[in-house]
Amino acid sequence: MTTRLPVENPATLAHVGEAPSFDRVMLDAAVTSARAALPGWSATPFDARGEILQAMADAVDKIAEDVAALLTAEQGKPIAEARREVSRVGQWFRGTATLDAPAIRRDRGDGRICETRYLPLGVVAAIAPWNYPLLLAAFKLAPALLAGNVVILKPSPYTPLSTLVVFEAVQAFLPPGVLTVATGDDALGPWLTSHPGIDKVSFTGSTATGRRVMAAAAPTLKRVTLELGGNDAAIVLDDADLDAIAGPLFWSAFRNAGQVCVATKRLYVQRRLYRPLVEAMIEKARAVTLGDGADPAVLMGPTNNAAQQARVNGLIDDAKARGARVETGGNDCSLPGYFVQPSIVTDIDEDARIVQEEQFGPVLPILPFDDVDDAIERANRTDFALGASIWSSDVGRARRIAGRMIAGGVWVNESGALSPTVPFGGLRQSGVGVEGGEEGLLGYMQLQTLT
Ligand code: NAD
Image (cartoon, rainbow, N blue to C red; front, side):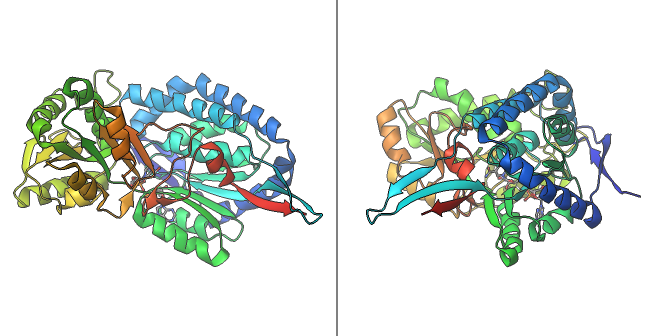
């Protein structure tokens, strides 16, 4: 009998439902049917695959309301956020469908003509985390399918249910075996990443797991794309318009209870604006209604699981032990689920864990600076390099500073906006490869030159 994977509501601790838990036999069967589907799907014309992506987008839109409710129940995010995530899945399919893979002809000048073209890679394992389970799966699925690959999609064991509903709905447009949703416990990821029948692993998750994925992929030289953790710095210059930036800046750190790869995770503020901005952030944090995201009045849900809550609470404890000031919030939330109150931390050293590590939760350290060069140096002094943002009323000045940030994506007066037609990926230990744009599409293809 198949074992089942229970799923808990992180806000209420109620049982939400169960997903199948793949064992090795089920995984082998999925790989076998994926390999059988590969010749037919890869021979389907590129444009026809794009049209299928469009139809898949329409199908997701049709079930959006039910899926959003389920996403909130298993992930914890407010229902408005859940609706936005589901609608972004359709947008990602549609936007990806506009991409094209190049074919380049070159005359070598020695009587030979070369044509370089891009072919599918084969069977792709797409592994997604729990913070944006549907959208981050779509980031992988859309380009992988457009490129002519077949996919085995593994959601996080914390959030498998909405993924099953969405991707089972889109399977109706695909031949059997082209897409399998494989749900399972902690054993399933390592089986996928070491399986000899899989050609590529596209992984989004923590840097620690990313290292394991790369090691497991090495013996069979699987291609890997790794979208990993970040510790994004936002730098606020003292010419910034406080009233205009306070809201977007706050939500750049606290959206989805801070569980966003490109959330602002450290905030550096030039001295003159430091205290006014801290006060504005405190005010915004205190105005947040924390609770079960199913209630439309709730602006912030819980962290997704007990381990994440314990980690974030531990970082707050560490900050307190170092003498930092928790201006608002803290780690003594009385709600029953995995809640952490939106917290603002000041008087904190640069080398404190909450500054140096990725908190992935609703806690923001705010640090002052006098000299812009010093702020840039501190912001870049990390092994992560995912995103960064510069906030200023002088866009030209902000842009020059943005060019000195070491990060895969840098934004001015906003943070974290991603698009299916523009590449994005982490530098350093924030990742390998990119998603989005033609560059992301080519990550699912292999180059062949005909001479
Ligand atoms: P995680 O690394 O714990 O898990 C991610 C996925 O990998 C899950 O599906 C999990 O079941 C699976 N997994 C766990 N161990 C595995 C193994 N040994 N082999 C293969 N798969 C394995 O990450 P998480 O806690 O779910 O997500 C949070 C992290 O994801 C944060 O660090 C965040 O910054 C990062 N993230 C990065 C991006 C990006 O685009 N760079 C986007 C979102 C989240």
